[in-house]
Length: 424
Image (tube, rainbow, N blue to C red):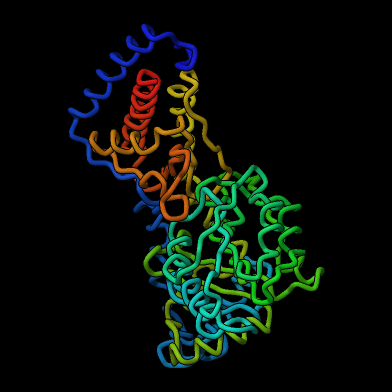
């Protein structure tokens, strides 16, 4: 196959007829496949089923400090889980709070606290034209939180090293810019890990807003697909070096380590910022779900066992990523109409089709029974100006289902591209 971009009209028309026939064949199969969200499949979830048995034994429901995990108390979370997340995140255990199953909930609450009480300055709601920086392509749920609270969302282009730091450093000179969203390791959906230079530039930011916060969502901190996974520089340690220790609030969870709907989350920050956050939490609860924390602490136990557990996840997920990439290389590379990321970890592949073709590709996939994340979802307000990015989530379908879905996707990408080229 020659590159579509080098074909004359007659060649394009011939190729379109072939691709259209292929598409109709897929459509006639009546498929019902879902690649819309980055969810673990059943096999991934069942890796943690033995966690439900770890309360057996002499200690029962008491943690190592003798705290009854069935009763009230302990708004910061149990000692064992704070210590485990401290090692994973590279933070002092005393500066870690354990929450429920959703780190997004912790992020929402942190933004809410900034709105109503601020972070050492006036409440954010008093800034009428408040803004938040959003690396793109990025995580739609992040963007939705700050949009909900009335922030203007400012896109920051991603590159192979992370966000465009020249733009970040320029924009934070505006006092109305209150924060930035970051997924620093295997970013959603690009799969990019921020370089050491990018992390250091974040740590040395000089925002005009005294209450500017880096929302450091380290969601994929242990989600390596290969043994030589990416290494991420410790932002908090770099912030201490530059006298900026109050800049970041760091988040993580076990959502894709154990049970997505019944995991535990963590939030970490400087002592000053954490004390501000605890002032809110003490009014929200008289005691979090310590039983679930106890189950996780006894099952995961330490960083070494977490690493071994994540290797089992990788064995299930890696073939799915490799299958998608292989299909793209065989079907799309010769046509010259797309490019994509090939991450070493995380949960997503970022696919770029011809400008103006992402929405049409999604439509074609849906008509053929394959549901993708909506085109534009990886940009603030759902607006991808180039209409070119698609977030591909390979993890949930079985390998067999995934191969079928990717066949449909590749055909749809070619179909949409040929339509555009012929119309032009």
